[in-house]
Amino acid sequence: MDILKSLLLGIIQGLTEFLPVSSSGHLEIFKVFLDFSYDSNNSLFFTLIVHLATALSAIIYFWKDIKEIIMSSICFKKDENTFFAFYILVSMIPAGLAGYFFESEINYLFNGNLTLVGFMLILTSLILYLSDRFNNSNKKLNLKSSLIIGFTQALAILPGISRSGATIGTSIFLGLNRDIAAKFSFLMVVPVIFGSSLKIILDNEIEFNNNNISNYLVGFSAALISGYYACKWMIIFVKKSKLIYFSIYCLLIGILSIIYSILNG
Image 1 (spheres, rainbow, N blue to C red):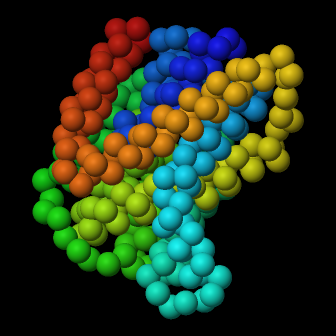
Image 2 (image 1 turned 30 degrees about the vertical axis):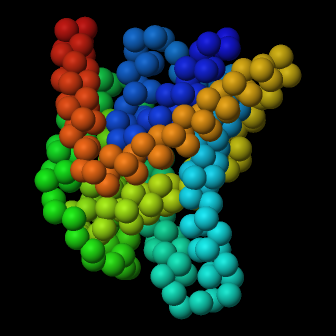
């Protein structure tokens, strides 16, 4: 893996993790068109660090909120921050169960099936389009809504469904404030990323190659910086109801993926 590829993969991971265009869908597309993947045995460490970099970018961006949530939780305060932390834990349950019970079935989906990716990207496009059409509301996050959003996050395991797009869209459909919808979507993925990273470590023999330190640093830095700005940009897009741009993008990429799959099937 050379420096340029590390830079490109880091940027792709950082941007697509938080922008509503599906990181898994784009990974499958890049597998087919550019003939590379970063989930092979030789690149597991790279996979690990770019995922951790995106989690760290969200932590840095929302550090003030996270610090308040941690302090409230430690002090057992019955305030919004403590409940927010609890709802994040609740939202993790569906994705955790899906990953545990259906791991082999999920892995089977990541085989370069661009037809599946294309239809899921079109579904993402529809979710984004509809979420822009909903009026802003101010319902509070609760146990039921956090669990529903968690199920949406589990569904986003499918390649082509944007995790951020699906969870933010669902939050808006449930009547949550757009600011809360975006913050909850970005913070709920942090423990999921750490959990999946731990699973990678436990299930595989991670290969660290001293000769690739520069590649690791480039990939980590690219994912960290692009992830941070993706968070920042996405907050703006959600607030201003400008997800239509991503909806159009996902629709076009979805249609092109299906056409390519049919022509080369």
